Length: 243
Image (cartoon, rainbow, N blue to C red; front, side):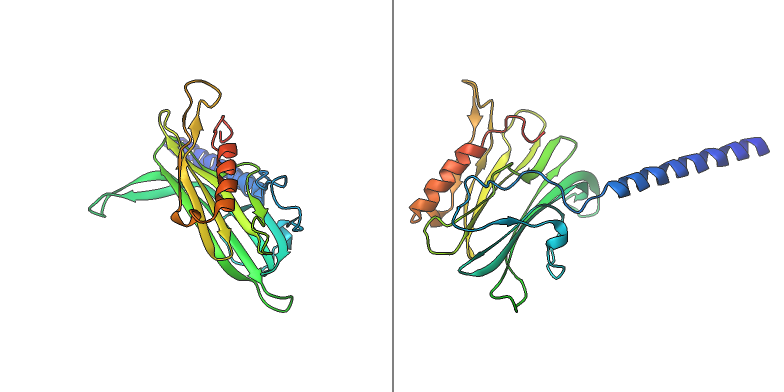
């Protein structure tokens, strides 16, 4: 009996030690920033000098959630700007039933985008806007993230105030349904958007999905609408780029 007890303790100790080692390795691998190639430099305006910020260069007074995948800074007529895009990766989420008593554990992942701005060198950065979205999924194929090389900083109407365009997707599927795609477009505090589906089987005669609806305030913004339509067509195809 004493030998069995000793063996059990040894097994528990080995398992615990293995878990600790695994957690230590995961902890060491944590990085505050990852490079995913989000910024579309080619289609951003050349008239505004846009610089990439490293994680350490982001002012410590700025509050945001998630792991940074892109941080950009520029100066326009509104002041000095910092755009931060982040993702959380997946985590367990409690999906409660209608009675709010029982729940099932599901996968959830989130993304955020923030624009911070200050008017002059002596002022503090203030949050201008925040984008938040998420995917809730239950054991299926899923992805929440920004479209590769698609975020743009432009001045399409040449008024000196930069516009920010951020395409991203939210995908949860168990079959062959298109994912959700959105392009959120800001000029100052004003938000515009295209919302629709990703396209699958793009290079075949059987292509499907890829449609969108535009926000009503784009009806009188022809230059914005033309740019966003072109951007949608350039990003709508999945082509395995999210897996």
